[in-house]
Length: 254
Image (cartoon, rainbow, N blue to C red):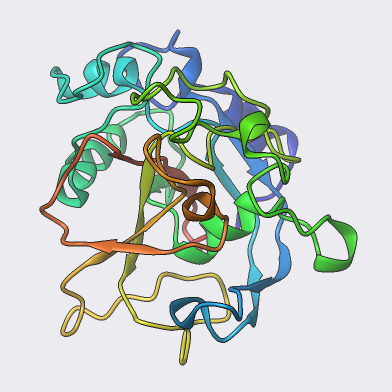
């Protein structure tokens, strides 16, 4: 399990590409583990609300940017071009190729590597990562006013925006609401009945024909940018409003 000791914090300050270590949009944020109530009762695919205990994790402060993707992959598939904008038009399968490359980084300790966040990890981080009685129940990641924390249809001018321009949430994580949807590790399930309660990915390779997306987009109305909202799409599909961020894991799987 990741622990917030001096060695771990030093590792987290290092960009996670061995190709261009000066890319500042590769920063990670340490999220202390804890329990939270996941989901919302208003919508069938967000039911039932259930308690999930998430281990400590380190997650990208920003979605993967075009400068980082290009440094690692040598190309830029994005429709809205800009080095600090999120990379988009990447499928779930594309993200796996990116992860495979950055996991070659020689600075990673034995047992460490990068993957997509699980759906529970993503929502836990978006909600502030604190116990339910210690944090506000914000609608969006970092607040109830979407204009302050995210890019959506009313303020995006119909395009993605460079990361980090809106307010971060309580943990210092940016762009979780709006800008681009983000791939998660989990395969899609129509509700939370039988979902893991330990923060792990819920993967059913026999039934899983699509993967989970989280976060809302530059072309969404506010209700579609809620922290609890879920989307699904086939792993080979891509669009100009779909990107991703990464999680650092250790040998224990956290």
